Each structure stands twice: as C-alpha cells, then as structure tokens.
Length: 149
Image (cartoon, rainbow, N blue to C red):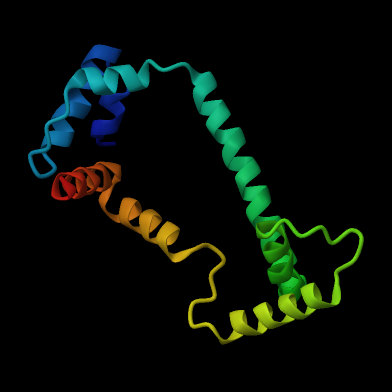
C-alpha cells in the first residue's frame, strides 16, 4: 500500500510539522506564513479549543430553539423579538395600543422583501467579513477615516 504524505507528516516533530505546513501554504498562491505562526497555534492549550466547542454547542442550542419557536408560531416569534428590542413588559399584559402596534409591525414584516430579523447594516458587516476577512473591513475603516480628514 502506498504511503501518503499525511502518514509521514503526522510523525514529524512540532518544529518540522510547522515548517511543512508553512511550505504547503506557500504552494497556495505563494502565500507566505511563517512556521512560528503554525507552531504557536499547534502549541496552544487544548482548554481554549474545549471552551470554543462549548460555546459552539450553546450557540447551536440557541439557534435550534429559536428556529423551533419561529416554526411553531411565526407571528408570536416576531412579536416577541419586537418586545425584547423595545423592552416591552408583556407579563402584565399589553395595552391596546401596544397590541395594535405589534400586529401592524408583524403585517409590515410579512410584506417586507427581506424577512430577516437583524438590521441590514449588521448583516452587511457579517457578509463582508465572511467573504473578505476582518482585515479587509479594518482596511476599509482606515480608508474611510483618512477620507474624513
């Protein structure tokens, strides 16, 4: 059976492995990443990764709970978001004008092209970073500051 690159790479010392990854990265569009970057990442304490996994588990629970709530009653879900955003205390019951405003806001939501829950400018930031990376956003902010001067 033929030996694959992976089989040899995993046997390397931390220093050699970091250099190998750095070399492989260079093969992608001649991207230079120093071996110390990879060495530092591979030397990180596992607790940080466990913490990240716990956070992702909690996020997944939140997302699935919110999705279930939305699927169960879209109208109440949207109205609950509005109540949270506007700090409306619905425990004691809604005033007639608050109920009217929530109903009208839900109808407006239904007629809106974009059926999202988060403001467009926040979604724009997410999409920009997701596509171009955080450094791209920071560079654009610096350029905007220079133009204002």
